[in-house]
Amino acid sequence: MCCEKIELGPEVNSRSLVCQLAKEGFPVPVIARAFGLNRTYCYSLLKPPVPKPKRPSVDKDALVKQWIRKLCEEFPTYGYRRIQVMLRRRYNLRVNHKRVYRLMKEMGLLVKTPRRSASRAKRRGRYRSPGPTSISSAT
Image (cartoon, rainbow, N blue to C red; front, side, top):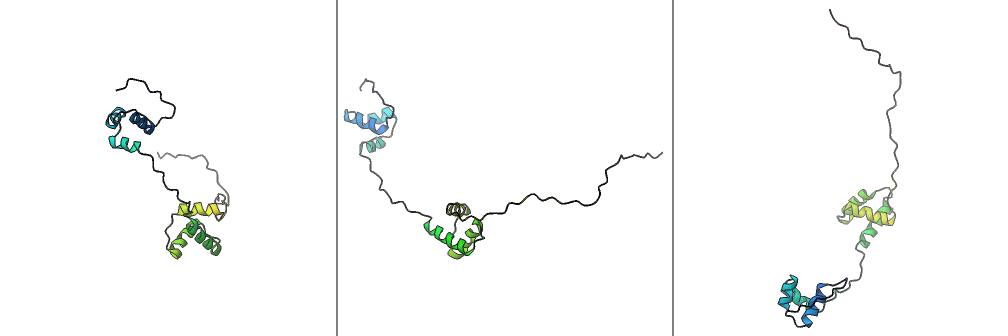
């Protein structure tokens, strides 16, 4: 084994270390044991990484947005919960109400709710102030 100290930079990953030691001639099982890694994982690190294919970004909510917009035009006073029920009834689409709320918020279709002030019961008439209570003792 080599007794040299390897200088490690700020960003060193296991792939670069395993590749460097394998190029220097160390067997992969010894490298795996030294780093505490799985031997088959070390062999996979020696292979070049396979890039993931780039998928075009697709708006998953595009169809749902269309249906929400159509329902909001038809029922302008419906909130997100009623729109969610209508999506289920008309289009047989089960959508979470939080998703419907998020989409309606993005599209600016949320219904303004009236702000209600606290209502208190109005009391009419005279109030009698409680007077001193007397306790009569029976003798």
